[in-house]
Amino acid sequence: MLTWLLVIVASVAVDQLTKRLAVACLMEKGSVEVIPGVLRFTYVENDGAAFGMLSEHRWIFMVISTVAIVAMLVYLWKFRPDNSWACTGISLIIGGGIGNMIDRVYLDYVIDFIDFCAFPNLWMWVFNVADACVCVGAGILCVWCVVSLIQETRTAKKAKEPSDVKEGSDETNETI
Image (cartoon, rainbow, N blue to C red):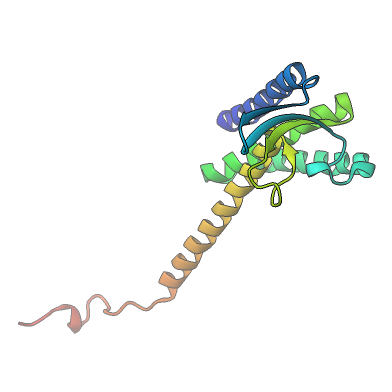
């Protein structure tokens, strides 16, 4: 369990540190191009949910987020999956959720600053480390679910297959 707590704490710490750096370095500049045409750091105060949605319903989103974070913490603590990928995914989601919740509680908005601008017609949102943790964690969980489902299906299929040759029968004693 210590490993998963460290993942959560590291996610929150890196998120909060990078947001403080964004405030210190970007707040007055607005935007800094890191890789021309691909990546900018752009200071944005997001008062909505993910990618600025639900800005008028902040408290509803905060309550739902808090319940989800607590539920995932309880699940990780009490019913921890025996798979490290699942625990890592859950821990990243929790850490990202806590990181953004800290901003919502203390600032009334979330600081976003990562501006992936390579495909402006496809991706136009600015995000932060917490958002990335939530998305990567969810991706890890999705892959884990698919792999687990495939493994369970294969195991069930093998259990249903009759063996071609029964032990102890005449067929097992080949004659040449």
